[in-house]
Image (cartoon, rainbow, N blue to C red; front, side, top):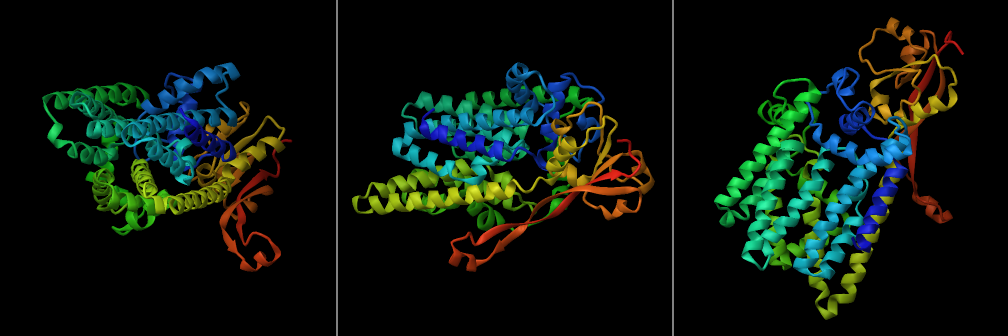
Length: 484
């Protein structure tokens, strides 16, 4: 790895350290890693068996992260609880993405030259989503690791000077894409289809056999691992996800967006300052246009689905950054444009970095549930504690890694009747009024992000004109007759 890869590694590490808690989207993978580290073999106490969620997810990714986390965790004392273990697991994922990105950037340098590779590294290191989210325990982030490797071999299959090298690159790419689609994220099949279609003239019997073998092996791996951990025969999670979201069309229950949303909203947010140069690269460089075409078609296919999220098109970010790097390198070749290009590129990269820092700070305010549980542990000395964690608190930072006291009972059961809360000594709740008349009193409150306050007049006094607005979101309540 070169210095620019180390810059990205530092940015990812700082993001994980500054914002250690996780949100509901990361819940399955985070809890699965905790349970694997604690017990290894599946048992009734595994979180996914108590709270299975809407659709199942594969344990293959959590097993890999757990295996890589275990040696350092063992040296640290083999702790399955604690924020430090959670951060360590997240850093393992983040560093895997950095490593895969370094391999992709190395291939960029081989094909397009060192200057293009440098611009690629600079643009990525300054983007919020490519630094903050690379350590977040999402299926999309797990899938980004093999997707970066597949993109590396995609470049090789297109631009290698040797025909044999191009053919090998296509076989490697096909195998990696098969594993990613079958085991980690079924929706990456959209990108896989367009990447393979771009090399249609090279697909022969060898490639087809390689792809078929990879699909079969990946399917058998998922069936073996996930049937065991889910305690269900013939469990193939990604097929269940495909059936739920596409065949049944249930994904729209989580919100819908207009068809243009990926192009007009998400791509500008993902690329930030790299976007103008990406446009220049596509217009000025034939190879950039060739790369972008496959991913533009993929995003257009995603746009046909009413439910849209930025993380679905996360694999497009490296290709967008490559197009931007090619655009910057192309302008830099013109002597009269060299200085303006460098100044503009650095200014846009610096603006992206400033936005990334601001967005990371704002994101750190979105985890009142995690902070509330940590505060309860620091202020409550009794060993006889039974705490109920409501849905909002559980969605905003509470994981099993944060359940530090082995003598306490932690409960996340939803839909309890008012009388049933009397079984608990403490509550983490977003609705204190529901309990204030039933023998519980507020002992502390955690606030969280509620928007931005913009006050231009503060510029006159050399103060920042923008500040985060906070509001109470999670209350810690104690039963009035709870033992001390």
